[in-house]
Image 1 (tube, rainbow, N blue to C red):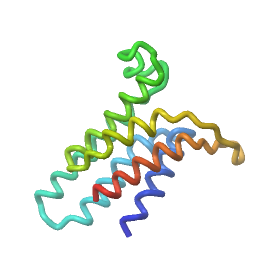
Image 2 (cartoon, helix red, strand yellow):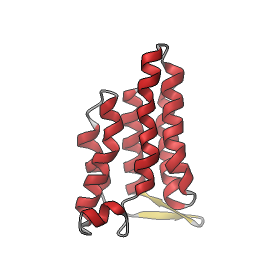
Image 3 (cartoon, rainbow, N blue to C red):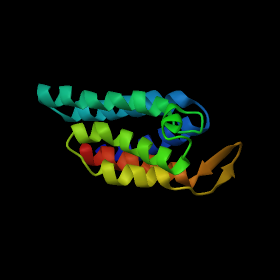
Image 4 (tube, helix red, strand yellow):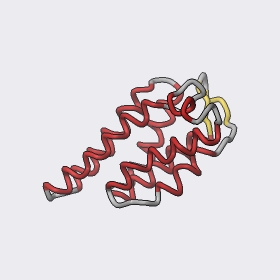
Length: 141
């Protein structure tokens, strides 16, 4: 049942990038936390799962050219995306999954095309980024 988190996180990330930012900023941390809390039985592990709430902060920062991170990275797009991926790996590290340090900067560095579905774009890069995040969260559960 936990495997459902991968397509849910992927969809929330892709929708949040295209239309309603709240799907990405608040949906991903809420869904991640809910899956972890419902899975865990010990009080200690439930408290530990609160690290997923950091995604609300990090996913709100963004990594576009006018973002806070881009300013720190002096506008270097590739560096900005790597730093953003590293930030997204922090909650996973607190939950003993260190694979995010490797895979999230790589996933967020990818630039790929896409195609139109109605008035929306299917962006392969968003599919890869949020699919990677969802997969890492799945293995953290």
